[in-house]
Length: 417
Image (cartoon, rainbow, N blue to C red):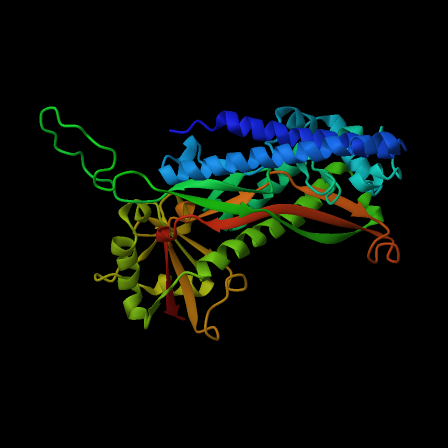
């Protein structure tokens, strides 16, 4: 078993040193101390070479661990970056942070306008101190300020009003823009080996040694903008939060669904020729196609057209296949598995609208949603058409990626509508 913690810590420290020197150079340039900044160039190049070497060593050791089949001792290994610190999160939860955030929001203050001197770095220091997590080159250049914790929580709470497939897949909250997850391949376990006196057990005599896959992710910036009247912008922070959170939470759900459905739609589907065989196809998927471990925790996912088909199916005694969930009369289940359905507008039918998709599986095992748990908002009253319309454009950004983890955990049927 490899112990990678020391190598990982050394790589993290080397990367942090590069950031420290780069920030120092940037500060010297801001102060006009060009010669002093140039003197640090050699130190920066040395630190970058050291960081590259340390990270390459760490990546090589992780690959070696995977080859040995021991999984490196941790399931998720970021390629670079760091977790959000408690200090950062506590700062974003403070009243001072919220007050400065909304002041900056109303006045079009961004990290870029503070860095170039258009707005006071001293006044908005608490916001600037938190943007080390926002990315960009240099750090914080491309995004807005991190939302106050209450604002993030409101967005997350409002997401629950919609059918979000992101709630059914596995979720990894990450800060690093790219990395990988070490995942053990699913395989049926073998029974214990019969032993004779003084027999020596060997590791994996029958192929029992676990095998591991490396699932890589790369976060992508995904955003949209909303035009807000300048009069509305002067409303109370609570009213602004509610208005913006409703807009952004729906956008997040639609984005999650779009990314996950792209994976599901690519699954090799079993075509059901007529509705009479749909019941048998669903039973076969649950009883035989999926491994019992996946079938037991599976859900049934479709659109409105697929729901209409499922609602018409009856078993051999004439009883409806789809039954109300005994714990919630507004929800349904089939053979004890929950039925989740989306709008036809968001999950379109196939083949000139003549076929609907029905996905059956354990989505938590099938895919992982890698997502930053922190959202960013920024405003401008000079860009786009904001100046001409006496309004302010609000941009919201989220960063995420969805990757397949275990293709055997989900199957797909296409049925005639």
